[in-house]
Amino acid sequence: MKNKILLFVALMFTQLSFGQLRVGVQAGLTVSNQSNNAINFNVTGQNLSGYHAEITTYYTTPVKNLEAHLKLGLINKGAKILDRNRNITTDSAPLYLQLSVCPVYKMLLENKLEIYVGLGPYLARGVSGRVFTDSMGVKSNVPIVYGDNPMIHQYKKTEYGADFIAGFVLNNKITFSVNYDISISDISVLGDDNQGSNFEGTHMVFSVAVGYLLGKGKK
Image (cartoon, rainbow, N blue to C red; front, side, top):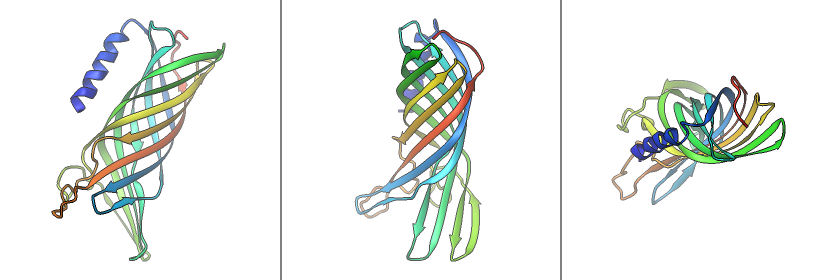
């Protein structure tokens, strides 16, 4: 699947090589959650807030109303897990370096306002993060370690999924976007629980961002 995503990115660059581009920076807030599913149970945490920042390249293609957004940045994910039976609260906050490529359909509503909607794949790699635990008033935090060993790792290193995007550009300078990301790959390192239930984890992230375009492009 990762190879297909990389091939998709390469094809997008090939198709867009004759277009114009603009480069911008964006930053904003995230609200994330995660679910862990198995045959015998389903656990969904509570929303956890965070931040994200990215560099976005806007490719204006020769095809009318077609643009592509290439985004590279850091994004917080994770969830808040409540264990009321033992009075334990856990905030799991992994940080990812994420690349997404979204073909978008854009419309010029006025001379100074363009809106767009799009959908595309993303590929993310875990780079940092911490797990914060509050057990009956005793607080602790440990760094997140990525890998495939459930004895020492909290998340798998690589994640991929779908990125839904909508937003607008004002005066060819000010940007605003809303995103919803959902992972397709399994983020859990638990694997088989040896009881016939395969654990699978999913990240879900809603984010908003404002930004500024650094260059001009054809509308």
